Length: 204
Image (cartoon, rainbow, N blue to C red; front, side, top):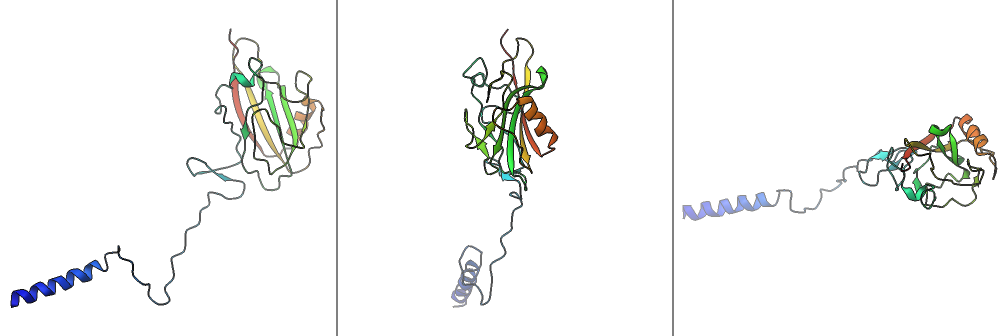
């Protein structure tokens, strides 16, 4: 009889423990509230969340065609289809009223390959060979409006600097204006910038 009594007592203790091990749902106590959900600062003003890592990145210029410091694919040069590469820069700094984009070659006396302005601040990327609606473009080193790709002389690789300007005042640039004058105007604006440098070397 005593042995049976101890068996019943142990069973009650085990049952009580199973009901409070944290794996069984229970009704909340009257007046209880859920804990506050922590907030994240990874999408603060002027930032976008990194697509892969989830780490915030600032106003940063990137290309799906090549990494920073890496060779620009032949398709974007005079040896290929000579089309502009895809570019992305995400959200822009607060106060931006206009975006402008340039491509210059500092190894060739800042030869102008591309100048584009009046890009709406809501635009965060451009596709290969495309420009946003409503933009204006200056002349390049070939004295033609629009893009002309890397085309250095044979020898050492040249560096190509893509720059996006987040202008706080309208640029005043017009379609077909001198690329060098346009670049000079943008540089004097002292606007926040994001840059991407690629290289290209022609076969000997």
